[in-house]
Image (tube, rainbow, N blue to C red; front, side):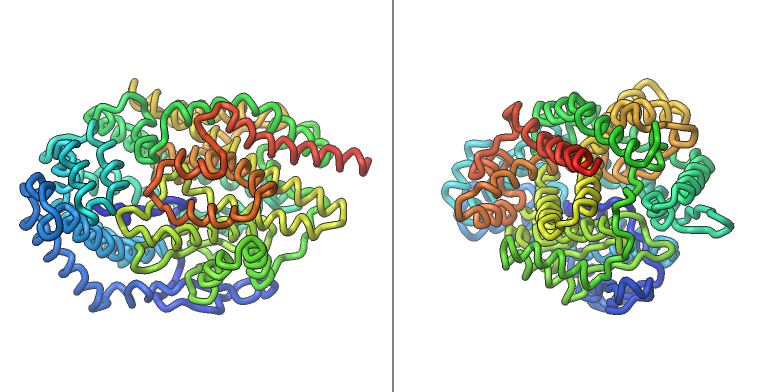
Length: 628
């Protein structure tokens, strides 16, 4: 029933944090140049694994789940004819409250586990809580299935008549979209209970394997985040060493990653076949409440733009670095103009909050709470996962943000990105547990918009042409990573899941599919050499959320168009923007974008978004000629 126990929708990797406690901290040990970095305070949820309140909530959740089933199972059709007491609205209120309670428990278990997946006690705790929540969800499984067996005309009349039922109309309408793909009650229960020993088990195997990986460089064993960060080092030799170590370790673990990929692809194929999905990504499109045609148009527009975007930019960058071709490990290398000084955490905080505040003081106020109330985990430590995420938890609590802050300009952008998610999650929380979840197609809107606000604020303050060039180049690279790279990931997933239908894939076969999309998307200015064929192994989206990746490209192109509207907007844009964020999952993307004059079904929509990236590349080219 609840989406939360496994819901880390913007997670870039499993979050592993050595030695974290529930209490939070203002001063984690790190590079002195960065200042004191905060860790999150999970005690806002529960004091720890053995908290008596957690035990009491688990017991309360069990009792209420059983009571809910006893009260409502087999009676919903009759409830749809009533108003007030005993009606559908009352059932939905109880269901919403249960979703929040189970979500709070699941969120704490997940965040605790992802804080340190190498701690066996955390692993047992997470597994035990997942099992208990799955058992409880079995008592609630009937609700959505039985709701969808009520005649549409009866349910429509119920929502028109009963104010409580009417409140949940968006959720009920969305639920109906699942109706053609629902199985009978017994099969649905089997799928639910078996998930613990199928997809969830292999997700956990992936997470724990990734947490244990170490990468040897000059005799020192380093965690993944530190090693990946070295790919942005100014020294070519350092980047080359990091790439070689990454390739070597990925290759040594290929058997596990190949097994996990094959198993999860087959598991999804079985589920899709039983439910009747036609296309391998249709289940994701349904969850995102977006039409397949819209995603196909996005993918086609980005693919068609590869030569004008990534191919063109990387050719320019190769020239700037004095190379005929960039090695694949030079893709995110800093330009010589890039400032080398580390950015202290306090400066990063001020940069993001001031950019947010210039747009809307309320936005900065909400983001400020993440700093003031210990909702952020910032230090990069051994064992902590690479990447970043914002986890919404539940409306009765608050979101948490994880970043790996190392003081680089990209880290400031990442902070702005994740805080955008956090602001969005806070605002959408007013919709309640059932309707606060934003479809993934719009889940990246606030995060990418927050990045854009921060970037534009920094760019306006930069008058030095060399620094401006470095900033523009970094932004272009980030946008290419968000749009071009993520659509290439999506195409890779399509190839893998399609090929898996014909039988198990070897590591070499998966590697060939990976290289085919990488060569196409990166272009001739990037040299794809031996070792890169294994780099599909560390992308957690493929494991945790198949076909999620197109949401990044969707969000970036959408925000590019949205920001263009903002630049030319009459007063009132901010109010419409906040209405979009507050809507959560209550409106379709077409309804949310209409006040801004935007339409994702318009074939030209994606071209407009991509043209902004092309415009930044034009500006870079002009700066380059002016400096020549």
